[in-house]
Image (cartoon, rainbow, N blue to C red):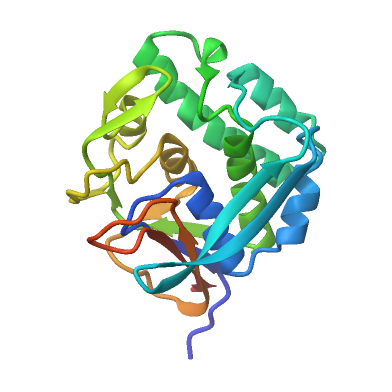
Length: 246
């Protein structure tokens, strides 16, 4: 009889992927939210409340991430070097620090290429906001909490239409998102919305060991559903993460 001893996670991105969807799905699948909350305190100075709410997306029960700042703002932008220093000085586990930096570096390199500037001069707007930093570091903490050895990911749908950001109106996918996803299998989808955000693309590209078309061989232990903010007619706006052993 086969022994299952490698802990794996499968990101089922049938409605795309974003930072908040990933973190809430991992918490829904069993990641220790208290560990995440306590660890986040080492990287941010503001009094931040991180919690999840139960919602339904086309009758699918899912976890929706909520981040609130008591005395501050989620929105100020930061540059690449500032964020890396925040992470390096946090005192978190080295594995978490490395994963978080890898995600930000993946996003930063794409932004640097799009804008033709050095990586060190990349200034993050939406991704540099406190909620996005919490999403990225929180995802790294959540995978650590779940003791994941290997991450698989489905082909990624991008959506269509126009996205409004700091640089004005841009086509979906945003240029940096598409740059990161070079060489990654994409899934056809005509939903007129930005399904995969730069943060989501950065997480998928930086942390995925293998992109596969379908659930890999595994013994399922838990399943988490992370909700996006919007509702679609075509499908539930959730990211499904399956945790198990292989």
